[in-house]
Length: 324
Image (cartoon, rainbow, N blue to C red; front, side):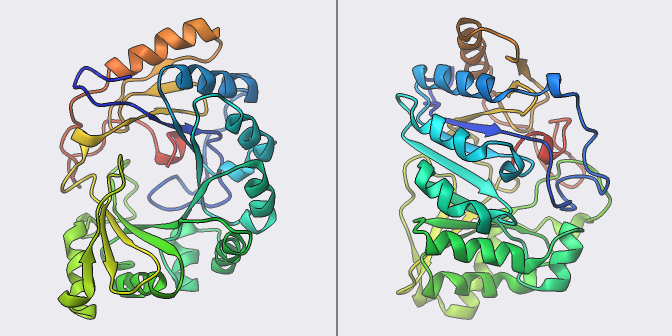
């Protein structure tokens, strides 16, 4: 299905829970979320129904997010049931990988196609700072397990934060040399005013690319062709097994190529990440859901408003309440 700007909408990001076992400073408050009542959240059956309806309308790719999706009860069963829906070609997950060592094999057997792992630093002390609660080794163990059980095209998502992890850009890039892992650098988005990061933390993607080119040499960095529907600018270190990606929602937005809508864990469709508009589908029949999904697709704006340190996202939610 196409929106009113003729963009083909084929991608649905589904947040399964607002809860998380970490407290990343750019994503959620230290105290976590204000827990909602069970009856306010989408049930497993409602989520599967919404995806089944979305597939009828042309959605082919599902990404499961959170919070932390591996905290969701019956997560393996959820993946398995989504894979059985006619029209769904790819089921992916974004996770902090803390529990991935436990679930990777079962998720692979259930049909999960791809895994993105959120990882913003390779240093234990900084990991504890940014996540407030986490241990770096837990995430690294999850990454190793995903490789071991045979996941292909694993991606590491690294949020660029000036003054925090900009000294590790080259270290992250080196991961792609010997392992079949893509590392994607993502500009920090001003989702809410936590006070944890100042204006200098908002680092444009081209500065990260410049550091990589300076270190490896211009002749050793190759531009790669984007996969269809990808919003990342892709590069590769010569002879490396993985790619480098740069995602720029702030300094060079990709709204013209946006092919997605989002479903929150409390049953609201968001046509745009950075808009306050939300369309409720919880509690509806599949016929009613279909009308609302069509409405959400046609409600997608041409582009989001300017984003910067002083011009915050209009989403009115923390990132864990939307789905990373």
